[in-house]
Structures are given as structure tokens and as C-alpha cells.
Length: 325
Image 1 (cartoon, rainbow, N blue to C red):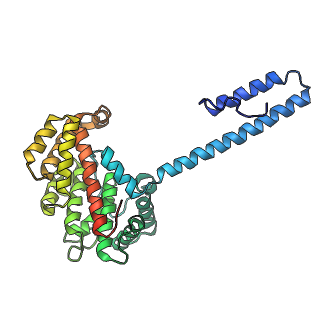
Image 2: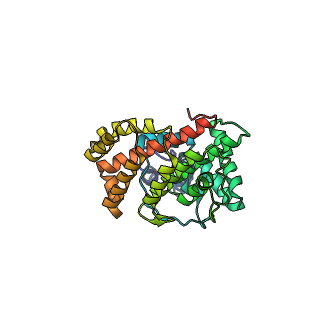
Image 3: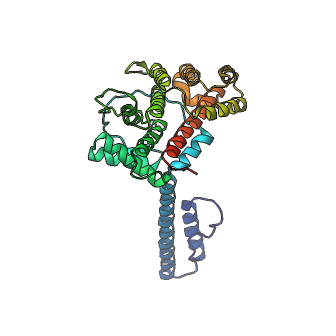
């Protein structure tokens, strides 16, 4: 009688079990004296409240664990599920107000580091070192190594782009790829960085995600093409091409198949960027609806983008002496 949930084996909500407990207790206690009946019901109330509180704490703990993600698990998710296309305006500011970085970041270490850097208002080089140190703990990359720091910071920038934190990612890659000082990213580091080429390519991903919005030099897509040409050939391209061929067949998109076939034996980020641009323009504000209906070309672009970003992060981590395996 004092068990709080007589039917705990089924999947009904806690509120149902509590109500059932009271009803059964009331029925069983009809022959009891008033004092005994009151004592019994109070015991059940205490037990059900305790159980409900315990269940709430368990749910919160599980939710906290679910939200805590390391770089490896996020990159794996990109590979298997893709990364959504974006069409986001940028501010071109060194610091944005009111951003909840812990909530916005898919990788817990990146979000916490951005939050700390924002609260302490550190300079860009120190922020990048903080990001590198945060990922070094997860990847085992080389310690006290400036080249490794540069590469890990760029890997963190890819995470920011995937999460829609375009200005933040832009501020990380710009000093490594642009030879002049800027008001938002500070002094250039192109003369002594180990990440110039790969950061130029990540720079193109920033502006691809800016989409059709007007930015520094025309639309984001237009600016992205500049950075693709600046970056040149990248070590990840053969892997991306192989994946793109497979996924074009899997989603059965004729436009995707034609585009990949036209590339021949070399991956063309320019051609892929054009596909992304056409997809954004064709769906407009109905991008979410198209994603929900698994529109083939959109699915292709997002799956390839996720794989591409995963390859870039893995490359940066490996070049820094670490591993995500």
C-alpha cells in the first residue's frame, strides 16, 4: 500500500502514478479509522514527492550529460548527419553582445572557452591560445607548440561556423589568412602562421554560410569564391570528392550527380559552392521545410558540407600532432 507507484512497470507519466496511488490508497483505507487513513495517505504523499523529485533530478542530470559533447562526437555526427546550410548576416565586430556561447556551441570546450574569453575581454592571440589549449586536452596535440596552437584554433573556428557563430569563426581565421589589420580581428599573423592555407579555406566556409547576405565584398557566396581561390588545393579534397560521389547516388539527386561528374577527378569547391548557392536561393525562407522533407539536393549539400568540415577538423588536429580516434 505504501509503494508510491503500484504500476511502475508501465510507461505512464509520474502524475498518473501519483493519482493512481492516492485512489488505491483511498479505496484500501475505507475500513480504517480516520487517523490511520490520514497517516497512510500522508506517507504516500511523502513517498511520491520524493520519487518525483528524484526523477526530476535524474532527467536534469541526463540532459546535462547529453548537452556535454566533445569534439570527437560532434565530428562523428557531422560525418553521419551533415551540417545544415546557413544564410546568416554578419556583424564584422570584434565582440558581440549577449551571446550565450555555452548554449550555442555544440562542442562544450569551445563554448566555455569563448564565454571565458568574452567575459575577460582578452586579445585575439590569447583567445586563440585558450581555444587551442581546450582542444589539446581532448586531442592530445603537441604542447607548447605555436604551429599546433594555430591549427587547433582553426579547428575550433570550423566548430563555430557549423554552429552559426560566423563572426566568432571569422575573427579566428582572418589574422591567419588576411595580410592587413582589421577592426574586428586585429593584427595579421600571415607571416608566421602554420595555418595560412587551411585557414583561407575555412574563411571560405564562413562566407558560404553568410550566403546571399551582403558583407565585406558583395554577398557571402561571392566572398567565399575569393577565399576558395586564395586557399588553392587542399589535402582534404580527394576524401570529399569520394564521399560526394557516394552521397549523390544515395540521395538520388540528378543535379548533384551531374555536378560531381563534371568535376572529373578533382574536387571543385567552387562548383559545390554554386550548388549551395542555388539551393539557398531556390528555397528561400522555406529551407527548414525542405530539410524536413529531405529534398535531395539540399540533403546532398548538407551531408557533403558536414563531411568536408569533419575532414578539415581532423586534418588540423592531426597536423597538430593529435588525434580524434
